[in-house]
Amino acid sequence: MFRSVLVVLMALFSTQLLAHPDHAMEGTAHAVYHAVFWLLFAAVVVKGISFWRSRRVKNESNKKQG
Image (tube, rainbow, N blue to C red; front, side, top):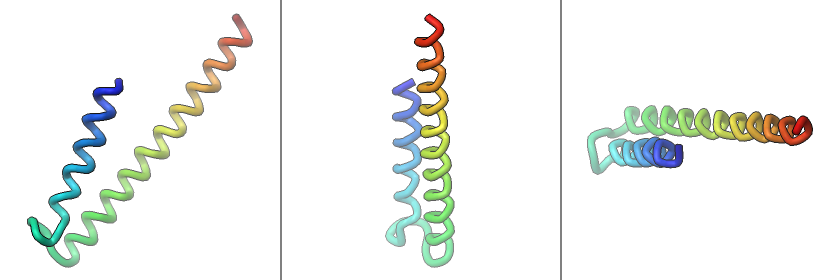
């Protein structure tokens, strides 16, 4: 699981290089790319937090039962 998370994070951050003006995109495309990137980043963070909370609750309920 750690490897897959690492690959996803590396892919997200390495694609951000394409958005900079010294590369392929300029102007409005640059702004749109960054907006989409940070929205996806926020979605991943929210999903990770919700996964962590549900896993913690599940582990606590298993400890109470066992």
